[in-house]
Image 1 (spheres, rainbow, N blue to C red):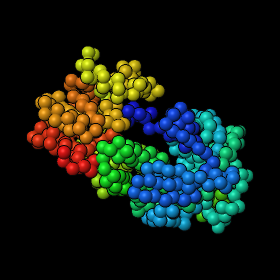
Image 2: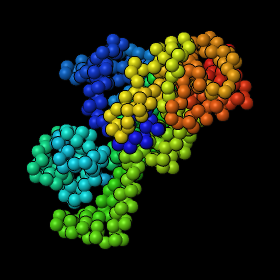
Image 3: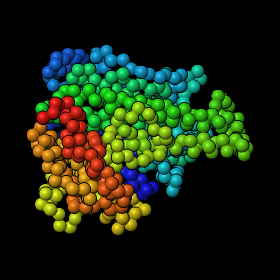
Image 4: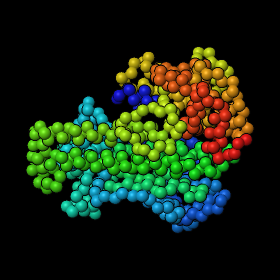
Length: 495
């Protein structure tokens, strides 16, 4: 692991298979009395008025229809979203003639890879050219390859063909494995023109779908609901007007578009690399392997191949895409791998490691108990860190932000009596506000640049989704600027 990642995010990047994540979510839902989970139903129809959404759902086992009523509906029903179809929302799409095959298999690959532990493994051998996503080197893996539909139509694929492909990818005959599933798919991206119609919203693959190259789809979907949930909650509580909901498409669509284009770019570069080995379209495996070895032996071609391999970095090192985007910025990132923290409206609050004073004020202690996670961050699994470093990496600036709170983080050298006006305004409109003062309520442990930004810049007001709403410098009329920004975001007139 690269511990330097912890300077930018409180958690290492984890490669989690979707079934495992869904199981964790199911376990969480089962314990939450506020959530009712029903299975075995599909959407049949939706109707809405200004104040209500009526969804007709079909019980698959019986065909019986039932109706549910809600104030808002979030459709997460996948790439072929029935809700999107019923709403008549069109999509921007980019198709290709490239057909891919994803094979899920179960195998212990640790004896094969040894100490070469990674997230992605490129398979150069023409019999199984593609790549393996190492979700769990002791268990579930995924192999993705390009399919020549003229030689092997997708309807002709069998488990036997998949076994031959995986055996070739592993490169050893004595490694047992099971084929869990396999499915073909077409290399395409699709982004809905709007993520909202009235009180119905699209999220996840229903709003945007793109190739799995880069693993961007799941994080994009989670960020959708992270953006949307607090806005709906504010409307339900009467704090915000429904106009705040129109910011959902405006903020999230551009991000999804960047993700989709990067995913397509990743896929094209992967298979361009494999084609540079002179194996594409060669039916004779022996000849294809000779071509590949000749490419490795030729200095010029080898340089080209090495450059192609380096060009894959954005495939798995793409932190700028995940957390570096800025709402309102229409320009895509110059490079997915080059993350830079940003103190800009619309940006996610940058992460920095923090500590709390030994004898905090009663206000700080109360805020800590109410807002902070029950347990600190545990990075002891990062073996490159010593115990002192592990103890220093327990709390993040992101922990200062509550999921239903506005958070004001203020620089230590600034006078703050006038912030009382902002607090009173938030109390009056029902917007919960928590204030943290650098040097009083918390200290920066490692990243001194974070403190410099606050000391020199004044403060930042952060939305419940951890994105910065506004910056206020010591030279501006701080509390009035913040009140204007809060009112504008909530869609309310000046109080």
